[in-house]
Image 1 (cartoon, rainbow, N blue to C red):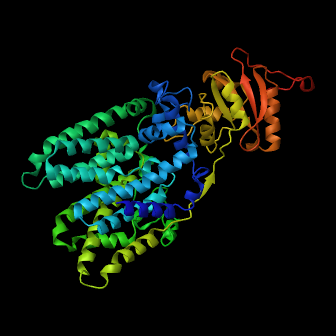
Image 2 (cartoon, rainbow, N blue to C red):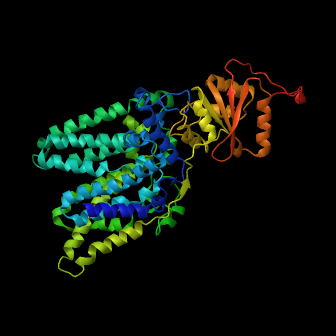
Image 3 (cartoon, one colour):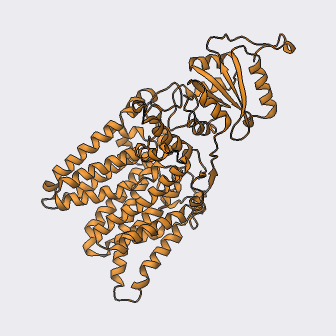
Length: 546
């Protein structure tokens, strides 16, 4: 196990290179790492003193339950909290959680396949497939979507229930399903479907169902209780946010072409990314893994298990097709929780999980086929080299994140707690505003998440004309007190004109000019009782506010 773990660590470093060189300073070139760092930091911030406010993130003020506008990543946040309380580098903590999840997913697959086969070499092959699955690169920017270690372990626990009839393993199955749910709500729901299907197939053995029904019932009850409690704020949010727009679900539904399309970073198959479009729809599992999976039926002793995992693979692929599959459309209409999920294509990771098991079985067959041949000694090395070469995807595209807290946020931190808005209002800047808000924790009008409040678009439209009367009225309705204007994101002429318009108002008071992370920023205070009239300089008499 130790050797396999070290090997998987090395493969993860290689797969995500050069991330390992920049653990404390760089993240994937995407907005979502900023969202994840904010989520981890918010959980650590609120837990010690105000745990009742856990889901009330400081974004999209004055709205509540904003942490539940996307996956709250509760388990990741609980693990990160002690390190953040000790003032650990949040970028480092984030990257260790990201890369550690990939390694642990491979180790979990090793545990499952070694149990099913008793063959450490076959287990290592399966672990490499699951660790280096191209899906990992597709979602390199999504922390919660790398937390797949509970999938193989939950499948292992189900097998143990049917082998032993032990209540302990039934409860463990529930615990693992619960851990998956609070790691990634998407995966918790998806894994529940796959675990139920595996249990039904295993129950066909004589007497197996009678032995397993009580343990699995207890495990299911535990998982439903934990995940049910966890989803309370999500259910409450549906009254405000509604369910996912079917058009959005359709856009994130895979097609069969998705399974011959690899992420563009892949060394061999990256060219396929430009032939088929789709943000999350590049689900190619690799030729070598598919070939090994096809060989899984070679050993007669494994055929029954191979058939089960082939069924799991097919079902996961079918569900990943989303609205391109009539069966999923039926489930979407009749299974209410599915209406909260935007991306059915994410079922693809469970297809990859099942395929990895089949690949382990296939390798076991190859090993038996050359058992008396000189090829046996080099077989494992040859297969691993092929897999590593085909899955190779480095270098990753990374962005630097500054660690030094800008002076403007140091100043805002010492101000009385009040609602802040940052300009320019721009969806591409909102994740950065969120990231920097972790240093002052004032409520923030700006925000970035899986959902946004129904009135947020209207708010942003009104604020485009700041500081006219309609925008100021909107800010007052939002109880905004502090306004930050970042100079670097305006053209010099536009910035000067904006400051001139602000200067004409009696109800916006200057609070200073400070350094931000790219240049300078002005801080203003919106008076709570001031009128909306102009403060017109002597040199600009009779000029209207605009």
